Length: 454
Ligand code: TYD
Ligand code: MG
Image (cartoon, rainbow, N blue to C red):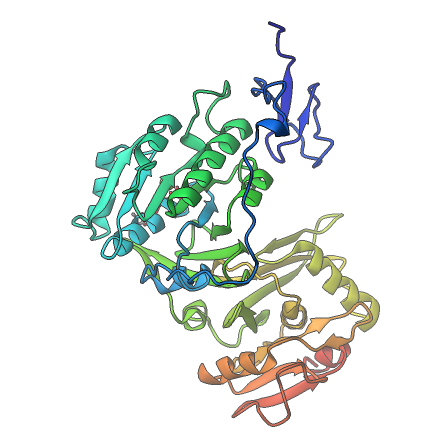
């Protein structure tokens, strides 16, 4: 038999090459290419003649919508699009130690009151999981627990008419298929074991949760491969130094992708945070220069957070720019617009920007709040403590309208804010006079913001 030729696989994107290289041509990742044993090829001579005829059916006709399984953990259900669809596969990604196992054990325990749930751990021994369940107050939950890593054993167990309704695999990187000569956690293994489990979940109709660790570089091992294979991708994020944890859907075949769930890590596991704004603002100290409350929207939910900026004279030839919770490129843009369009040059200053509470903001609607925080810090004039800010900033310094303005204003009014700094052109969803008790200060250009800090 011919010796199989070597096969090099990028551990980031799964691209296959015949030679090793320092950089993956396909995705540009460095040092991600690893030699893996060749996979079995499709047997020669496999032609259409040997295939089975598939049956076509009419598009018309309706499948009875299967009821979703509701975990009862509201924040999780919402991110999943209102519960779990039978036969669907969810990937739960996140840094080690962020709380993936905790969340899934809590979800398993909650689901076990109405459905059969199997929790298969490849990372922890049965007793360790039991201890955790005890700590979470779910010691008596009816969850079937196993410690296993062999795909063959897992499939043999689950491929039965009485398969559980929900299966949790913690984590996909610990599983191995003995048909593949690569270490657990490599792209080949992750892809093969996931594919097999996904097929099984579809055939037997169970909900499959796959836990995936994120690598040091911030991506799931073989991320693109896995993300394409599953129905829903949930990322569990947050700063380990903070107690807040955000569950974010980045892909969902059964719901919206911009929803987030907010949790708080307590000594009894993850607690839901139904009103995140109040919590994010809890530690706020009013009337501090450089702090500004941004009225944001995450998915369908308004969320008020404090944006903190510190502008300080720099002793360095290239001053520092440090950002936590926002896009560094976006900060550079706001600084450039302040300089070029408003005459506020901060190029000789160190600039630090922080979104309080460990939230990561992705909306451009935060531009105006960031600018206000920067101007406030540079001028040492506090932004009024009862003011919220939102609006997008364009390259010519114009302040642009943003979506869901009314929702933002309502949340601000609910939390006792009295004024709002907003774009002068009303955005979609905001008619005049609907701001409730808030006093509206509309700005058309970033220059107007500087006017607020004489
Ligand atoms: P874990 O769920 O094991 O993380 P992952 O599976 O994503 O690696 O979370 C572990 C962390 O959570 C650990 O640092 C301890 C903390 N924790 C609590 O604070 N309270 C708890 O009740 C539990 C179970 C964990
Ligand atoms: Mg874990």
